[in-house]
Structure formats: structure tokens, C-alpha cells
Length: 128
Image (cartoon, rainbow, N blue to C red; front, side):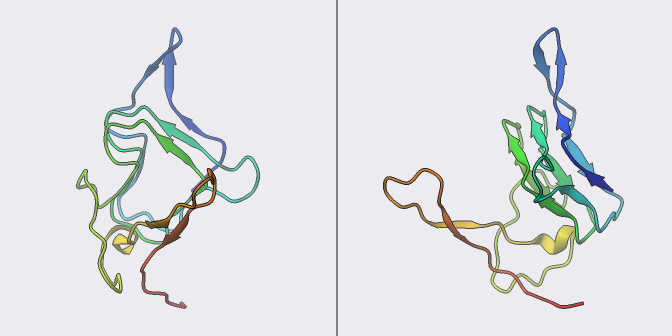
């Protein structure tokens, strides 16, 4: 599956109506999916959902790239369908949805800068 320029927002008479439970669910062990992308126009808007923005249930190698995910009641991205953050761990050798990849930690936000943020993600790199 690949998505581009998708809007997971429902509007009725100008009001935003949330999706229930989440905006987008990658489930049943699905793998190798692309949600968004790096080319112009490839991003998606996933917002105003009763649950999470995106849930990756079981599969691996699901890429969530350059999406606008905001204003959801739950987390923007949830790995493992537990409706909460998956804690970061050293080495990141977990089994589960997208191998329970660690989320980025903001290291520094330079003064007088509104766009540049340094982050780090600790994860195990593998060549398959």
C-alpha cells in the first residue's frame, strides 16, 4: 500500500468530525507499506481523530514519512495498538510493530531558530 496526499479528516457542514478509533490503521501484520513520502505532494494530513493518528498494529518495514499528524486525542503514531507511547530502549532490538522503533528525542533547539531541531533516534541498523 502507498498513500499520497490523503486527508484523514471528515468534514460535515464545515465541522471536522473525527474518525473512530484512529485515522489510519496498518494492521494484521501488514508490512512494507509507505504512508507519505519524500517527494513534493507526497505527505498526508492525519488529524482530529478520536484515537491515534496512525496505528501500526503488528507488521514491520512500514514507512511513515513527511506526514502532518496533529490534533488527535491519542498519540500521533502508536506502535502495537496499546494507545500510548512505547518507551525508548538502548539498542532497540524489540519485536513487534515496526520493531517498536524508538521515537526521536529533541537534543537541542537553537535560540532564534524556528525550523532547525537536532534529534537522535537510537536503533539497531541492519542490512537485509
